[in-house]
Amino acid sequence: MPGSTPCSRRDFLRVGGLAAAGIAGVGVMVRSGRLLALPVPALGDPEVPNEIVAGILKNLFGDRPIRKGNISLDMPLVAEDGRVVPVFIESHLPMTAEQYVKAVHLIVDFNPDPHLAAYHLTPALGSVEIQTRIKMKRTTWVRAILETNTGDVWADYARVNVSLNGCG
Amino acid sequence: MTTTIGDARIRVPDRIVRGDIISVNSIISHPMDTGFFRTAEGEPIPAYFIKDVVVTYGGKEVARFEWTSGVSRDPVVRFTLKADQEAPLAMVWTDNRGGVFRRSINIAFA
Image 1 (cartoon, helix red, strand yellow):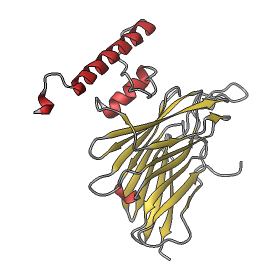
Image 2 (image 1 turned 30 degrees about the vertical axis):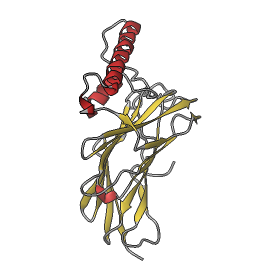
Image 3 (image 1 turned 90 degrees about the vertical axis):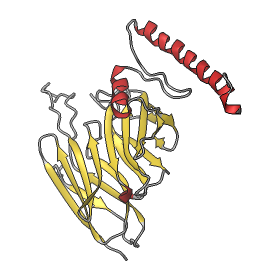
Image 4 (image 1 turned 30 degrees about the horizontal axis):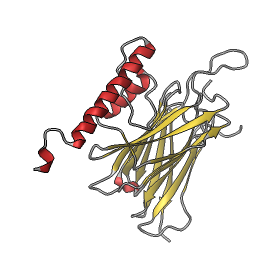
């Protein structure tokens, strides 16, 4: 069987990825001078900045992978007034009785209370489109992470430059 | 401002056909104080914000939102709804001091 060779290309890549993750993990420990177990992001995803955000993600999604895709987060690149920053979240995933998006979480890394909002949804909504306005303390990554009824987790990220602190 | 805390509005399209996925716009008047600001006299302004929003359609819960004071003053939220019955669409906002604000509109087909 072609898939059962002792060291397939896929296995090789997986081991390589783990090794790279290990090295990156060591980097986090050395930089902060303490033992931190911050998850290592996939390539191109924002780094988890601290234990608070790590704890929120762990609480919500456990050890499930948070993959990028199937959701879009639209925010301005620059927010001149951090008191009122528009947010638009959209997903094209199905909203049927068998398959639906059951929750969308909005996390603002460097806000005093990073887990800003949770939207619990049902198939009765017909689609996933959420628009609101939030406060932001300073320039940071914003995470929109959805969870399906089957337990899949999908995310999108936006980096917003904040000129005026909206959190006091 | 002259608006009263808890004044709320829900807006849906004028013309709805059965089966449409409509856009629902809502706004409620609320200070959404974070607890981090002070008055000009230096007195702290305690946290005062809406923490929970429940949306029902025909008496059945279709969405529930958990908010913090990170949502902007006079919170707006827009979401979609599959209009498959002529029934009331109701929203209930609850704040961290136990204030409960309700608003309901009727979904009717053109």
